[in-house]
Image (tube, rainbow, N blue to C red; front, side):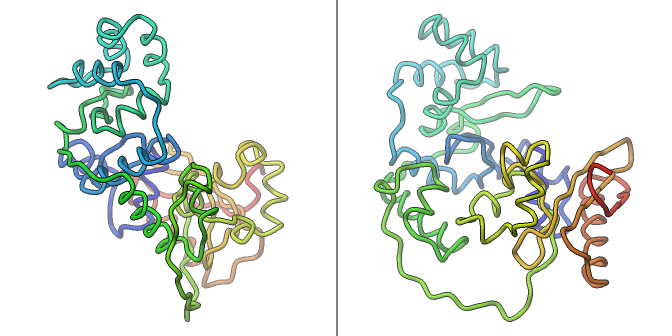
Length: 300
């Protein structure tokens, strides 16, 4: 969740962590639930039915009885995971208790794709679940039309790309991917900004092929990084300069301070160093903490 919040902060000027949480749990303009790749995402409430329908276009496990039990259990209620597991077990059988209690993805994903389950406001450090159709509204969307729209949005954001790249990002077989329209690409006239992106940021997750995003020096560094060696660049916070990864970083909030350690793969120019300092200040303001910036090797 912290990564998702920072991903929004990198794109919306002046926003704070409290703002993001207010949109999720008070205004309900953002919805947290399972969609593409069967993983948790934050979606604008108005767009969620489209993304859910697109996931249905590539097939979902047939667990109608369980979905109906989930919908019935959540009718007008906000339940903890263990509470939901208890209620669904009463309705659909004891075999469901362990799977729901452990977060078995396909049971939640099927219910989410039909608008019957999303995250509700947390109770302390525990997640809760509500019915999406009751929490934020719902509408029926044609799955094939939704998948085609998902393809157009992917291309607009990450293009140039083809069906194979879209399929990798969406989590489907290339043969199942929709045809994508032809596009022309015009190089940017000015360099892109310097950004500190969190792990699993949508820019990195969507970029195909990733070798164009990640220079060789970064790939070599990932081999000795605790998470990078297993998850690659997707699981590591990245320093982005002009659209490409130029280093790694980490954060640690301690009381009223947040320590931000950055390891560039090359010497930063004076201008880039000023941008980095501004990025650290932005993250500090987002978290409501004083930023402490350190530049050097992360394990130093």
